[in-house]
Image (cartoon, rainbow, N blue to C red):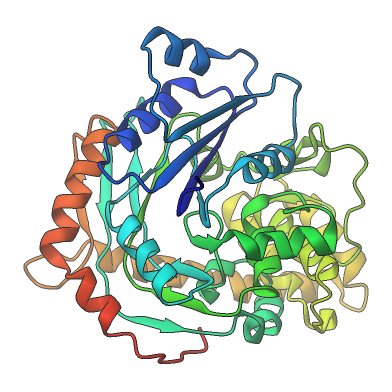
Length: 398
């Protein structure tokens, strides 16, 4: 009998974190869910652990494929295995809060296609510079619906650098009716395409979801382990020439969208994949308004080591501009983005006794402890049932 929810975890060569996450998930007493572990590691350490510890929980589905797969293929295989009515994808160093199950039950009773949580709990695993720290976000406790397709053109004009700001459907850290993913597969041949699964899913699902709900309340925990892509990005490792992008590994022949500059950055990978999804799902936008200057500004803030490469590749698509004009426009966007970042950081430093804000904690040993603290803190601060009952169909564009 299929479950109401599938928690999907694609993993590769991070067994120690995945095992910790798995053990924490299995401690939940809720039974109407399954855990899908799609393992593409070089060796099957997770399977060996499960056999050694005699873990036979019926909620666990483990699948190992040794043949190297691309990011997209590993995700596609994991989704294919899932049998839940609803699905959510988390990373192998992430976690969930107990409120996830309550929201899925509510979504099922109210014919909701997707739930996009605005906030996440954030957890940095212990590493060489941190003893483990977590952030529990302040929430406005609002809930509303929107039409994701209404935000596509604005997303393009924003340079596709902050797509999460537009509260689109989320497969990664969001709840989605699996049938909406099947709609994508029927149209394109696969659940996911492009180079990065999270943004492809957000764009493609925008064309298939019917009842999309946004909730200002964390349901999951976004982890950042020493091997995490999140950590790499903060160190500027996601930059350079396209040949350095790991997204092409085992991907086969791939045609880069001609509207996106040919350099490797988080911003260009997101933009290129978003445009692939728009093309696959026949979402109409005016690409003449794609904001390459803002895209370039975001990339240079992350890493200015490849400034010449980034500028030259952008100029090939903005040949109506001189180099000086491009640099001047980009400089304006960099100032705006940096100012927003500074204001955000300054706000977080205000002592809690003066303003309601995020809770920051240190000495968090592992995802188990992070989950326990999250559940206790969220239960004490918010009445989730009250938030869900407050929803009367109210609409908000973003």
